[in-house]
Image (cartoon, rainbow, N blue to C red; front, top):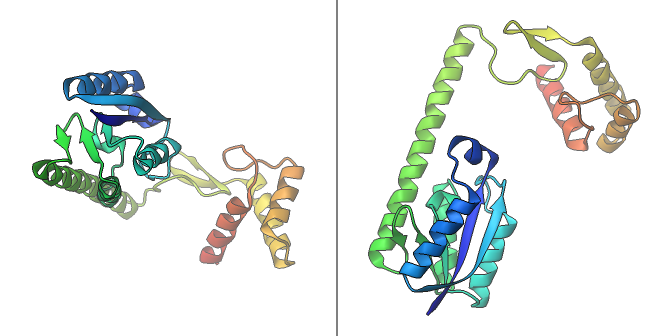
Length: 226
Protein backbone atom coordinates (compact mmCIF):
# COMPACT_ATOMS: atom_id res chain seq x y z
CA UNK A 1 0.00 0.00 0.00
CA UNK A 2 1.29 3.46 -0.90
CA UNK A 3 2.28 5.49 2.16
CA UNK A 4 1.01 9.07 2.21
CA UNK A 5 1.66 12.27 4.13
CA UNK A 6 -1.23 14.65 4.64
CA UNK A 7 -0.49 18.37 4.51
CA UNK A 8 -2.81 21.01 5.94
CA UNK A 9 -2.42 24.77 6.15
CA UNK A 10 -4.51 27.72 7.17
CA UNK A 11 -3.64 31.41 7.34
CA UNK A 12 -5.36 34.08 9.43
CA UNK A 13 -7.04 35.40 6.28
CA UNK A 14 -8.21 31.92 5.36
CA UNK A 15 -9.73 31.30 8.79
CA UNK A 16 -11.68 34.54 8.71
CA UNK A 17 -12.88 34.54 5.11
CA UNK A 18 -13.29 30.90 4.14
CA UNK A 19 -13.51 28.93 7.35
CA UNK A 20 -11.78 25.79 6.04
CA UNK A 21 -10.40 24.74 9.40
CA UNK A 22 -7.45 22.49 10.05
CA UNK A 23 -9.79 19.87 11.50
CA UNK A 24 -11.96 19.95 8.38
CA UNK A 25 -8.92 19.53 6.12
CA UNK A 26 -7.66 16.64 8.26
CA UNK A 27 -11.01 14.86 8.11
CA UNK A 28 -11.14 15.17 4.32
CA UNK A 29 -7.61 13.82 3.97
CA UNK A 30 -8.30 10.82 6.24
CA UNK A 31 -11.46 9.94 4.32
CA UNK A 32 -9.70 10.32 0.96
CA UNK A 33 -6.85 8.02 1.96
CA UNK A 34 -9.26 5.35 3.18
CA UNK A 35 -11.21 5.44 -0.09
CA UNK A 36 -8.10 5.38 -2.27
CA UNK A 37 -6.06 2.69 -0.46
CA UNK A 38 -3.42 5.10 0.78
CA UNK A 39 -1.74 4.43 4.12
CA UNK A 40 -1.82 7.78 5.89
CA UNK A 41 1.23 7.82 8.17
CA UNK A 42 1.03 11.42 9.34
CA UNK A 43 -0.74 14.74 8.83
CA UNK A 44 1.65 17.70 8.95
CA UNK A 45 0.36 21.17 9.71
CA UNK A 46 1.37 24.75 8.97
CA UNK A 47 -0.94 26.85 11.14
CA UNK A 48 -1.21 30.58 10.48
CA UNK A 49 1.20 30.39 7.55
CA UNK A 50 0.81 32.33 4.31
CA UNK A 51 1.10 30.65 0.90
CA UNK A 52 3.28 33.49 -0.35
CA UNK A 53 6.38 31.38 0.25
CA UNK A 54 7.09 27.66 0.17
CA UNK A 55 9.68 28.03 2.94
CA UNK A 56 7.29 26.74 5.61
CA UNK A 57 8.35 24.25 8.28
CA UNK A 58 5.47 21.85 7.73
CA UNK A 59 5.76 21.80 3.96
CA UNK A 60 9.51 21.29 4.10
CA UNK A 61 8.97 18.38 6.50
CA UNK A 62 6.58 16.81 3.97
CA UNK A 63 9.15 17.15 1.20
CA UNK A 64 11.84 15.65 3.43
CA UNK A 65 9.61 12.63 4.10
CA UNK A 66 9.15 12.17 0.35
CA UNK A 67 12.85 12.61 -0.35
CA UNK A 68 13.80 10.00 2.26
CA UNK A 69 11.30 7.47 0.89
CA UNK A 70 9.29 7.51 4.11
CA UNK A 71 6.19 8.31 2.03
CA UNK A 72 5.31 8.11 -1.66
CA UNK A 73 2.47 10.63 -1.81
CA UNK A 74 1.40 13.98 -0.41
CA UNK A 75 -2.33 14.61 0.03
CA UNK A 76 -3.81 18.10 0.36
CA UNK A 77 -7.38 19.31 0.70
CA UNK A 78 -6.90 21.89 -2.03
CA UNK A 79 -4.05 22.83 -4.36
CA UNK A 80 -3.73 26.33 -2.92
CA UNK A 81 -2.79 24.79 0.43
CA UNK A 82 0.62 24.26 -1.20
CA UNK A 83 0.88 27.62 -2.92
CA UNK A 84 -1.16 30.29 -4.69
CA UNK A 85 1.61 30.92 -7.22
CA UNK A 86 1.82 28.95 -10.46
CA UNK A 87 5.60 28.77 -10.54
CA UNK A 88 5.86 27.64 -6.91
CA UNK A 89 3.13 25.04 -7.42
CA UNK A 90 4.74 23.59 -10.53
CA UNK A 91 8.17 23.57 -8.87
CA UNK A 92 6.75 21.70 -5.89
CA UNK A 93 5.06 19.16 -8.14
CA UNK A 94 8.29 18.71 -10.08
CA UNK A 95 10.22 18.17 -6.83
CA UNK A 96 7.67 15.66 -5.56
CA UNK A 97 7.76 13.73 -8.82
CA UNK A 98 11.58 13.78 -8.90
CA UNK A 99 11.45 11.48 -5.87
CA UNK A 100 9.05 9.13 -7.64
CA UNK A 101 6.13 10.33 -5.53
CA UNK A 102 2.75 11.84 -6.39
CA UNK A 103 0.54 14.71 -5.28
CA UNK A 104 -3.17 14.29 -4.53
CA UNK A 105 -5.47 17.30 -4.25
CA UNK A 106 -8.95 16.39 -3.01
CA UNK A 107 -11.03 19.42 -4.03
CA UNK A 108 -9.75 19.44 -7.60
CA UNK A 109 -9.78 15.61 -7.77
CA UNK A 110 -6.17 15.65 -8.92
CA UNK A 111 -3.65 12.83 -8.81
CA UNK A 112 -0.29 13.48 -10.47
CA UNK A 113 0.47 9.78 -10.72
CA UNK A 114 -1.59 9.81 -13.94
CA UNK A 115 -0.99 11.76 -17.16
CA UNK A 116 -4.47 13.28 -17.01
CA UNK A 117 -3.88 14.28 -13.40
CA UNK A 118 -0.67 16.11 -14.33
CA UNK A 119 -2.52 17.97 -17.09
CA UNK A 120 -5.28 19.15 -14.78
CA UNK A 121 -2.78 20.22 -12.12
CA UNK A 122 -1.09 22.49 -14.63
CA UNK A 123 -4.42 23.90 -15.83
CA UNK A 124 -5.69 24.51 -12.29
CA UNK A 125 -2.49 26.23 -11.25
CA UNK A 126 -2.58 28.44 -14.36
CA UNK A 127 -6.20 29.45 -13.71
CA UNK A 128 -5.37 30.30 -10.08
CA UNK A 129 -2.53 32.53 -11.26
CA UNK A 130 -4.82 34.16 -13.84
CA UNK A 131 -7.35 35.01 -11.13
CA UNK A 132 -4.59 36.40 -8.92
CA UNK A 133 -3.23 38.58 -11.75
CA UNK A 134 -6.70 39.88 -12.62
CA UNK A 135 -7.31 40.88 -8.99
CA UNK A 136 -3.94 42.65 -8.98
CA UNK A 137 -4.88 44.53 -12.16
CA UNK A 138 -8.18 45.67 -10.67
CA UNK A 139 -6.50 46.88 -7.49
CA UNK A 140 -3.85 48.75 -9.50
CA UNK A 141 -6.52 50.44 -11.62
CA UNK A 142 -8.52 51.43 -8.52
CA UNK A 143 -5.45 52.93 -6.86
CA UNK A 144 -4.53 54.82 -10.03
CA UNK A 145 -8.05 56.26 -10.13
CA UNK A 146 -7.84 57.36 -6.49
CA UNK A 147 -4.49 59.03 -7.09
CA UNK A 148 -5.95 60.79 -10.12
CA UNK A 149 -8.70 62.12 -7.87
CA UNK A 150 -6.10 63.39 -5.41
CA UNK A 151 -6.84 60.77 -2.76
CA UNK A 152 -4.06 59.18 -0.69
CA UNK A 153 -3.63 55.43 -1.17
CA UNK A 154 -2.16 53.03 1.35
CA UNK A 155 -0.68 53.44 4.82
CA UNK A 156 0.64 56.87 5.77
CA UNK A 157 4.45 57.00 5.86
CA UNK A 158 6.21 57.43 9.21
CA UNK A 159 5.99 61.10 10.12
CA UNK A 160 2.38 61.47 8.98
CA UNK A 161 -1.10 60.25 9.85
CA UNK A 162 -4.38 60.25 7.96
CA UNK A 163 -6.98 62.73 9.16
CA UNK A 164 -10.16 63.02 7.09
CA UNK A 165 -8.37 61.41 4.12
CA UNK A 166 -5.55 63.94 4.27
CA UNK A 167 -1.93 63.52 5.39
CA UNK A 168 -1.12 65.44 8.57
CA UNK A 169 2.40 65.86 9.94
CA UNK A 170 3.18 64.17 13.29
CA UNK A 171 5.77 66.30 15.10
CA UNK A 172 6.97 63.58 17.50
CA UNK A 173 7.68 61.26 14.59
CA UNK A 174 9.55 63.97 12.71
CA UNK A 175 11.78 64.35 15.76
CA UNK A 176 12.69 60.67 15.40
CA UNK A 177 13.39 61.21 11.70
CA UNK A 178 15.69 64.09 12.62
CA UNK A 179 17.65 61.79 14.94
CA UNK A 180 17.92 59.20 12.17
CA UNK A 181 19.20 61.80 9.70
CA UNK A 182 21.72 63.24 12.14
CA UNK A 183 23.14 59.89 13.26
CA UNK A 184 23.30 58.48 9.75
CA UNK A 185 25.07 61.60 8.48
CA UNK A 186 27.71 61.10 11.18
CA UNK A 187 28.26 57.52 10.01
CA UNK A 188 26.27 55.66 12.67
CA UNK A 189 25.26 52.07 11.88
CA UNK A 190 21.57 51.24 11.40
CA UNK A 191 21.63 49.03 14.51
CA UNK A 192 23.08 51.87 16.61
CA UNK A 193 20.33 54.23 15.46
CA UNK A 194 17.67 51.66 16.29
CA UNK A 195 19.20 51.10 19.74
CA UNK A 196 19.10 54.84 20.50
CA UNK A 197 15.46 55.21 19.47
CA UNK A 198 14.51 52.14 21.51
CA UNK A 199 16.57 53.46 24.44
CA UNK A 200 14.65 56.74 24.36
CA UNK A 201 11.36 54.82 24.22
CA UNK A 202 10.41 56.33 20.88
CA UNK A 203 7.86 53.97 19.29
CA UNK A 204 7.68 52.91 15.67
CA UNK A 205 4.59 53.73 13.64
CA UNK A 206 2.93 50.56 14.94
CA UNK A 207 4.16 51.06 18.49
CA UNK A 208 6.82 48.36 18.37
CA UNK A 209 10.60 48.23 18.66
CA UNK A 210 12.93 49.70 16.08
CA UNK A 211 14.92 47.35 13.84
CA UNK A 212 17.81 48.09 11.49
CA UNK A 213 15.53 47.23 8.56
CA UNK A 214 12.94 49.79 9.69
CA UNK A 215 15.60 52.49 9.92
CA UNK A 216 16.83 51.57 6.45
CA UNK A 217 13.33 51.92 4.99
CA UNK A 218 12.98 55.44 6.39
CA UNK A 219 16.42 56.43 5.10
CA UNK A 220 15.56 55.15 1.61
CA UNK A 221 12.24 56.99 1.66
CA UNK A 222 13.93 60.20 2.77
CA UNK A 223 16.50 59.85 -0.05
CA UNK A 224 13.73 59.48 -2.64
CA UNK A 225 11.88 62.49 -1.24
CA UNK A 226 14.99 64.65 -1.24
